[in-house]
Image 1 (cartoon, helix red, strand yellow):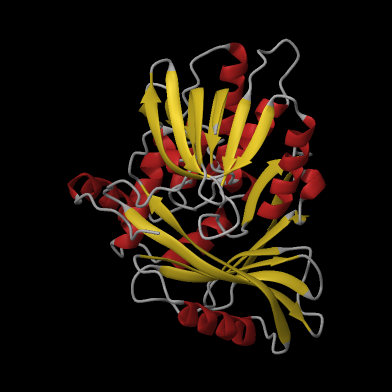
Image 2 (image 1 turned 60 degrees about the vertical axis):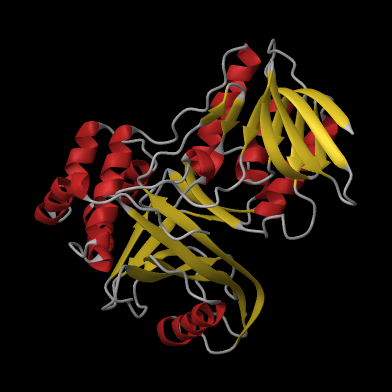
Length: 398
């Protein structure tokens, strides 16, 4: 089977779905483009369901399908000190991947210009005037898609070499407690009442969407991902000892590894082939948040395509943000700062809305400097001075 299209999108995760959605909704007077979205069929090639969290002011394009949203965040230190803050006018939002898939699927079905094909992509090859995507459909039939522009969102097998690199690895349980146990008005963003690893840091993360229901995650910033039994022991310990939840059911699970790296991600890999999403550097190195940057990046690509411009995806984060993140990762990795004290102190000293804007790259240089004065200056300066001499390496592969 052979298809011809203006645009081919490889992968139906956050980046692929978002770009397909923008292209299915062209503004008035925009160029009309045909698009093929290549999504992995059910099976080992398809990424399991996942949860994305992000923050934004006011109404957003995904509000209709959010699992929940909040305007209060909480950080707890290991000794029980609590910092709780409102984030108005921002809201912290939780979106499930199956809800995004259904939303975009409906818009694609209503569009005459975008089609979705289930196939496993083997390779993307440049060709005169564009590129060709080679794939296999269910049953083994070969599929080729020739397109003027190809956008590949598939995860990399390993991140690029970097002087500063850790992994954010986690396992989460969707929990239904037998008794009221959660406060659905506040998110526990970082709860450091967890046993801390010898290297890096760990914390609990609680997204409550009812008195009895929450997504409870155990997360580490370190070099080595745990096995499933280790995560489950940590989750049982956290629920019982920190949250005081003894009787509950686990209704679903999710698990993942997010590279936190200062390495450079190439956004163009052929004359007409680009990367988008996490594989193009959309993940914020020091936090692991990705979804908001994916929206900015894919919207910019769609606007360029609709205007007939070369659609090179923009860098998701500024050079200043990437440098600050590299220094912080190097400081945590080298033990110059204690992660729990660092993050608790930051939330205690900086207004939460400003800190969230900083984490999203929306602050000015003056605001960044004011935040910098509220961190361990000597340790961060030492990290900045030694960073250029650190060897380049990768974080553990996914």
